[in-house]
Image (tube, rainbow, N blue to C red; front, top):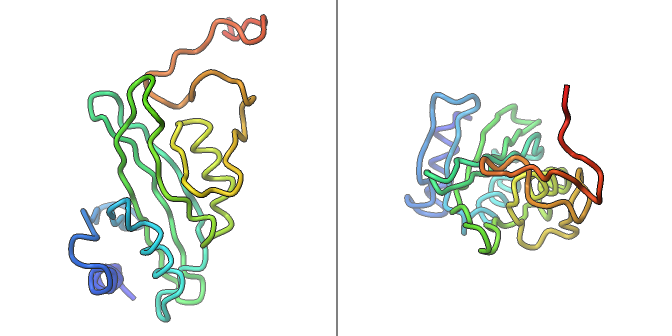
Length: 168
């Protein structure tokens, strides 16, 4: 099944506005979808005969920076029996200092492999995954300040009295 046919099935089920943008020059093709419909569309892609995206191979986050004011979560989906691949992208507004972290619905209830991926994106970029069963830091200590992959991240000088900066 081609990505065009998959996109048409999504539009047929969720409406034309459910796909915000198609990025055809990406590999695999990326469908940007409306964030509130993420869970429903993922469930549809995973459970629909002929689609059956049974494997979430990657979930990553991107900070587009202060000027853009957005962050992204990208999901790479594979259908092992039908041998097709697709990426989904959701874009959320980037929070300012002292504002709550941006939120995206967790897809752990659909693909268990999202568990650690979502924790990593939360830890390093500060995107909160709503309804994640155990959303806590995975790479850094629980009291580490900030999220190191954000473009405006300020590395602390010390952590519990120990110098953090590496000097060569």
